[in-house]
Image (cartoon, rainbow, N blue to C red):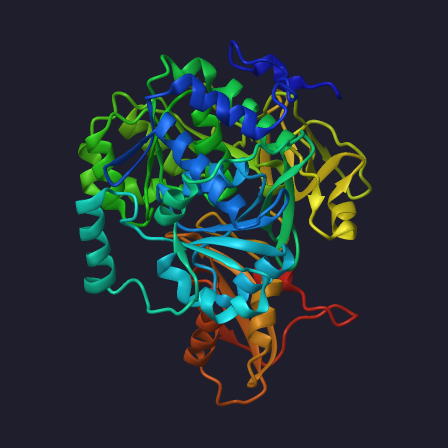
Length: 553
């Protein structure tokens, strides 16, 4: 590993390296957490609690059920739900059964779902009933034969659960009617699974256990293959980074970010379990009231989130009246943290808001600011233990301090590759270095800073939006001749999608494009701004120049 100048600025007690081979599998680590923490509370959602030993038992039953349905080691199971208690049960049960997890955003449209499920050859799915209508539209085009449904009230207890489901289904009408034969609820699957014995499945460090979808730097979503070793390494790196600040092992952590997102998956689920922490699951992060309620009900010690969430909370009067005396760690990721937000957060809570950096392809954390108060605002911090980062020019030559170029990452957390995409893997991982596509620089103390993001990627509230996908959808509209998509600044979400369109039919109106996009794209991908033009700037070979559109916007 190259010389690492950042080690001199590591917080006291943080090791230069971790042992990525401490466990043979993620499952071995999880079982250790279950065994060590017993009756301690592991997850809480809407007041309902799962202890570590209860979660162990329920997930074992769920895994046994999956095996009883004929699923075998390596088969893919999609988990498509918000932060419900069913998520950790299904996650750990599937891992115990030897399955590969395919985390799926529940807000995906049928088109997006079909791509992900067919690309990964998904055979089973656990889906929140609210979104089953979308699955109904595409399931015939997939290999999915086992469908398990989760309801918001499904694990909240008999009385509260029935009441919650009645409100969600009958009053708020949040569950559109669907017709998928032979569906089984997660609750019934657990009950049926108790009649079977779970068969142990061997899993080695290089086995792929998660397909986490990402656009990479270009194009359509690809399945990043994350191994046992990848996820274990990143969990141990995060654990080492936070250890001095976590204290007595009685930590309460808040997880407003969805567990299907790689940031929350590794940090809030895996790393926090390593401390025996209790994690509060927020079903809907846009519901600021639910976050504020949990702050009032618990002494929150650790919180993760994205810039837009922290900003929204800071601008909520009710949040300003909370007791933050027990808050020790807050970490921002997923998108750039604004300096004004970090400053206001520290002023209000007394807790430093530390920015981290990573990619799905790095499981995801590559660097993070210290949480001991020595963070440097405006940077993405220092590379985590056992991680090397460098800045290179267009020829791949390493650049010096203060010089701008592409950031590259090397470490045990770097993915195995993209599923069934060897060429794209080779373009992304070169000689063991993960090419991020992000332009950055390193200062004399080893702190890294992002100078410019990936050329074309748009970040909407921490979610990647890729112009190629938006353009491909809009180009299908019969009245569109040409289209280009870019990101433009937004106070609310960091960025929003703006599209430039050359009309084939002059009668085309903005409303038609919005309606069309809503049919084919998740909400955050739908353009918020539309500009009609007579022509779009192009290179000498006819490539549309998004850069010029951004510069002239």
